[in-house]
Image (cartoon, rainbow, N blue to C red):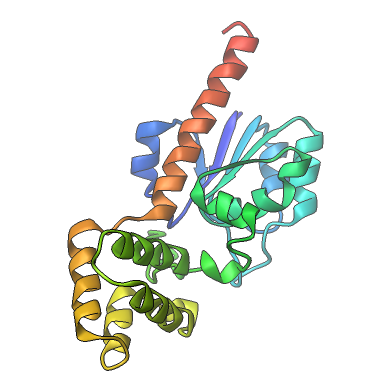
Length: 222
C-alpha cells in the first residue's frame, strides 16, 4: 500500500526525485487519478505535474475530497502550484516560488506553466513561460539585459503558443525586434546562468513531503 504518491513528469526526472524522496511516482495527474491514489491508501499526495489540455485536468473537488479523508496534499511547480493556490484555504499546502506567484496574483493563467512533453520519457519538449519569465528577470537583475528588453522579450514569448515556446525560438524571434546587445546578452546569460524554476520548486516540494512523512512516522511511533 503506497503511503506517499507523487504525480511527477516534466518538472523533474524521477531518478532525481528518488534521491530526495522514496515514493510511488506516477505520471502527470489527470481527472480521477487523485481519488485512485486515495483508494490505493496514500496518506500523502504530492501534486507536481498534471495534464492541462490533453485530457481532463485534476478537479478541485477531488482535492477537497482527499483533504476531507485526512490525506495531506502538497502542490508545487506546475498543476500542483496552480491547484494549491486555489485550495490552500481548505488545507492543501503550496510550496515554492511558482505557488507564491499564483497565490499573490502575479500569475493568473494556466499558460504560464503549460508545456509539451515526451509521452514516454516525460521529458519536456517546450519551455514553460514561467521559466522564461524567471530567467529574464534574473538576466535583468544581473545586468545582461535592461528593463525595456526584458519586457520586450517577455512579450515575444507570450505571443507564441505554448507548445512552440523555447529559448531558441525566443532568440530567433528577437532578431530585429530588440537591440542586438540585449539579444546577445540574454543568450550569454542562458549559456552561463540559466535556471529551471519548475525543477527547483519540485525539489523543494519533495523535501517538504519527506518532512511530512517523517512527522507521520513519528506520530505512529515508528
